Amino acid sequence: MEQVRYEVLDGIAEITLANPPANALTEQMVGQVIAALDRAAQDADAAAVIIRSAVDRRFCAGLDLLVLAGASDKKVRSLLDKLYPGLLEAQMRLDKPSIAAVAGAARGGGMTLAISCDLLVAGRSASFGYPEIDVGVLPAIHFTHLPRVVGRHRAFDLLFTGRTFGAEEAQSLGLVSRVVPDDRVMEEARNLAHLLTRKSPRALKTGRKAFHNACDNGYRQGVEAAVDIFCGVATSTEGREGLQAFVEKREPSWGGER
Image (cartoon, rainbow, N blue to C red; front, top):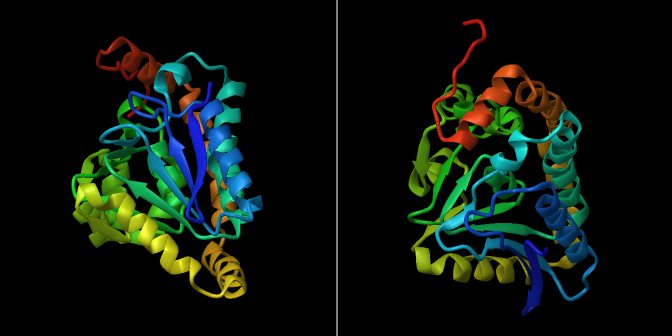
């Protein structure tokens, strides 16, 4: 089933998440996002990329916990290998600027999709969060990403409270490039994409690669380690309990040490 659409409009590749009701990420869907990024990388008609959602008021809810709760250890690792290092490598192969257009809620793995892009445009009512801790798992890739952007103490607040925060706060923290009225998110993303594509193609391609290399500073190694962290927690007794409690719509019963 196609959960991700690809089309080129006026020189811009638009990768559209289309898995209602909330664009919850399955392994198949993450694979389709990566395939779409690779297609854009090879597409001579596309000079930039926008990742957007077809679902009203939802960008991406993160991993599909209904699927994750019943997944084997091997399947959990396969999914995380795609979402973490797989998505990062696809963005590195892209050689074209990428923009996340967030009109609605982005949570957990949805945050991972958004921050993989070079720029992030958000609607004023967009909301963000890392709720994994509430079901006994961890947004491990963001342990590497978030402190670099917002600082250690603010990152700990967001990652370990699991609270939701809005677009204005996200911009003040440096997580969002631009905030615009909800009905102008795609207009702004397209305008920004066209602004970038009017630059020297060689300078843009070479500069983007140099920029990513300069920003790496061990980031790739951190992303690879994040897979082990997530899988170690998600496949533990408490992780399984948290996911099952979510499926059963009840409070989890934590039995581990404090």
